[in-house]
Length: 158
Image (cartoon, rainbow, N blue to C red):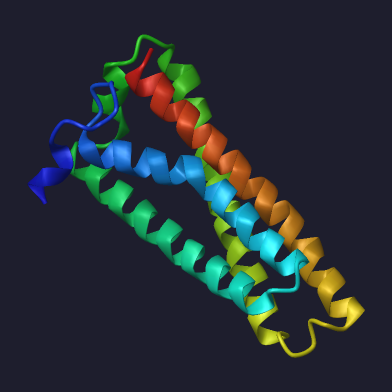
């Protein structure tokens, strides 16, 4: 897996795996929004397939990122290259991680709820409950994405 640590394709000093993860993180909310739009159009089966697939891809890329970061020695060696205040970066990273973990649980529950009650979801009360969970989930996905992209910029641009 040494290919992960070759020079990335973006104009920074980031290794390849960071560039790959950053691109996925940046486009994920847009893909999720497309999946949501399919539900609004009545394409429920496509909505389900997209949400499950995007969730799996997201989890796989988190694992890929974690592996690469651990092999590189964790956050500290990456942080050392940034000119920004390290206390700020650690606090920002902690915020990002907390939002990401909470969002993962929310997204998992949203998918579970949607699949479990798929047959009943056409009933107004179940659809309302699913949407009530999905809205903060999407906000969390978007916030995780924005903070992830900002972390990349903080570490490799500044």
